[in-house]
Length: 390
Image (cartoon, rainbow, N blue to C red; front, side):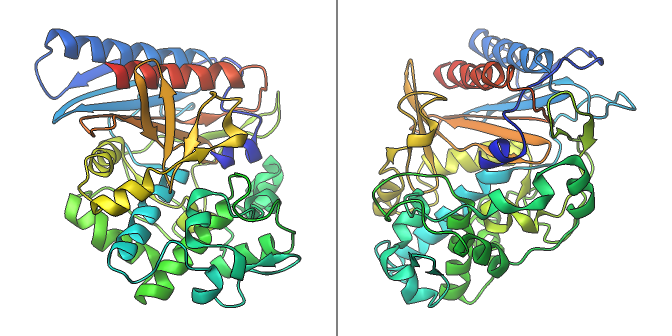
């Protein structure tokens, strides 16, 4: 979510010149309700393409029944169709994977949610009013720590020229946290809510301190392996995506050119947003999260304890944040979700509270036109409403 605010005003923009039809494929015969799901998904992606994104792809899992749709193009130069289940950077949906691992460690009594960060990472959260003695594990997972978001200060996201100059730069977790520590906290920990990628950089560091393994190694062994999510991985310094994938495009200023942002070093996001996946893998992951496959009941309940996401109320009143998971209210109650953004791409998901139905889609262009931003965001949320409510 934060990437969208840093890079551009919103995920929206000027109508692109290339117009390509949409395509829907299904893994099962189309019963009446399933045809309705396919229609909603296809029309929603077409609308997003019409609002200015170069391409979009989505998937719905209803139990084990799968519906896939795509709209637009994967390459503005070649005009190739969007892949049906291509690889893309999932951005902040990485946070939910990291939260699940930390909550599993809590369930194993290896760390506690109310432990101060200083206990595990001495001297890391310190300086300019920051104090790891008064920030807990729960608060970094719930975005109530008050810690400054290091992403705000990165040159790579400021302009097209700086993106081209710095998109291959390597970042360490220590460097990112040090950037945040150069700023005072936004508020006393636990008193407000503010989205900060720094929180989940620290969460990855906690996993490594507790287990002795890199955060991604624990994600792989605890989540990806058991769920057979074979198309989800952390690329480290590898800046390219496997085939098939869509090219992604970033507009850094209103009226500015579209910059191909496909080649990008994801260490800038690491445990806050560095994973690569597909819509099929993500849909199964979200069903597992909501369906109780990954956490013991006590930790699943902790994950769902939410606070009002104060800075997101302009998107939709009532959005709340748990431990690495969001609650989005809608006409049929609501759904669990997390937004994800990286340069040129954004992804959204919805999963019903019982885990039966999940929906994931992504768009492959981030545009800087502030007039279309609210329209795109609201169309994305309306699509998730329709898909989650059935």
